Length: 210
Ligand SMILES: [Zn+2]
Ligand SMILES: [Zn+2]
Image: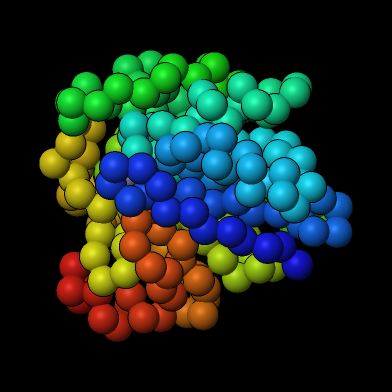
């Protein structure tokens, strides 16, 4: 059974997730949004070793804490990102566009692709490619834990914005219908911003999907 520690961080209140197995004391960080030292301290408090960093996409508010986080870990954990977001990553996630500045982090060495399996402890997470918010946006689905980390694809009662470079509304809706609404209704959706929701609730109540 995995433990999920949500941390709301940074200038646009982004959800970073520290996900760990208390038994094996291994963990991953999904979207180290901001304040890398703080995320690291949460792991150290539990004596968890951060093995990998998984990025849903490369927007600055999801990677702002990445440089400080990996600097504090030896050896530094590999970073996983879909290659279609590499160019966004190389310009610090578009931080300048928002008048922000973040520290550049090491290159991602795990090139995510659709259908790929990621592992934490004895759990498998399947990578699903969900473009529309950014071209290389992915979500991480763990069937055994009935949970999906869905970044900025879908939010409680809303969907990701598509007006930023690389965004596309029709593509986003298609991604949601194909990769999220097809999951069991009791699947928890843990988004990049705001509170958690479920597939069933969004199917019935999300005004963008009716
Ligand atoms: Zn985003
Ligand atoms: Zn975001």
